Each structure stands twice: as structure tokens, then as C-alpha cells.
Image (cartoon, rainbow, N blue to C red; front, side, top):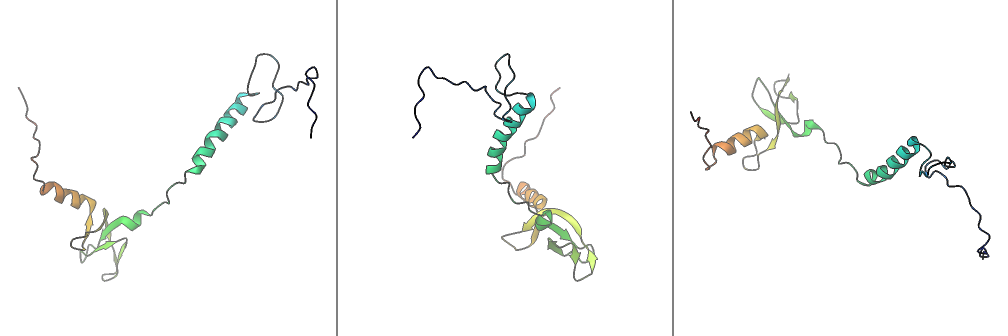
Length: 129
């Protein structure tokens, strides 16, 4: 056990910079010895919060892209080469397999079909003179 220090025996240690441990310069009160140490402490505080949240795994754009053969017009998901014609395919855009008909469909085609079959009236702009 340590012995308690008597009230009259107070040893004063000079304050130190929490970032680097160097003694703080005399003069006005400071928390850090330099702007560089203040910035390093800020980055260390905020880096720990960012490191706790992992980034989502990066997904290849190829996996969600529809390609079409210009020769036979067959569509492929994530395949850039037509195995039947032995030709490179053209990129149509992002898309996937339609759950209803199992055909390859792009997002643009899906949104065009949804807009065309929408029962809501299309807002028209009128010009007032």
C-alpha cells in the first residue's frame, strides 16, 4: 500500500501535451504544445469511430450488368462474350433477371414499362400567356 501524502507536501509536475508527451510551453494555458499535436489528437479521436464501422464489401459492376450479342441478340447477365457467336457483347446497362418471365431486363426497361403501365395521369405543363 502506498502512504498518503501529507497536505503540505505537494509535488507539482509540469503539464504535458497529451499527444506527444512534451512539456507545455510556459505562458498562456494550452492543452496541446502545437497545432500539429492538436490536429493529431483530433484525427486519433475521430479515426477510432470510423474504424468501428466497416465499409460494405465492394461489388463488381460486371455482376449486375446486362450484355447483348449484336449478332444473335441474346442477352447475358455478367457475360461480355457470346459463347454461340464467339463475338463480344454490347453493354446495355444495369439490370438482372425478371422474376416473372426469367428474361434479362435492364433497369431502364423496367422503369419505362412501369411508367407506360401506370394508371396515374402524366402531369402536363401548360404555358400561360
